[in-house]
Length: 140
Image 1 (cartoon, rainbow, N blue to C red):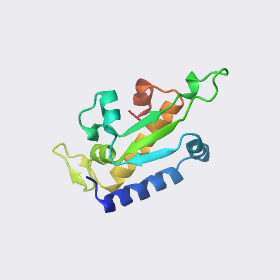
Image 2 (cartoon, rainbow, N blue to C red):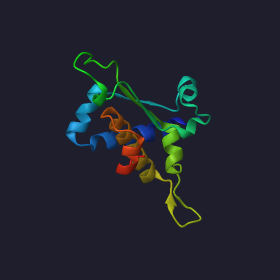
Image 3 (cartoon, rainbow, N blue to C red):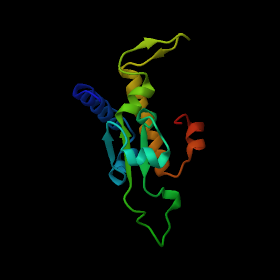
């Protein structure tokens, strides 16, 4: 579905995004590693009632910090999954264009920004932020 060269380009952008995060946030990724797939598995699509795999950009799995307790400090395995197809689609694709409203869409810079937004969105879930909180912060 996604060409090897686009996969490699995406992964290089992700590395740059991670390198540009503040050190404390980068350190967090040791606790909640980032996995990248072209699209979510069928089981995830079914669980969230999503028909089109391009609709899902990322997923935080595990127990948010705000829901952990002293009696159960582990919280299980925590991961962040990013889905190339959803992120590229949300960005408008690899090719830059101007839509009918005169807004620039797509292109490498837009894909990089969508990677950043999605990664920070999922990190926000790690800290217990819900969708409304993330929308208010601009990471919805």
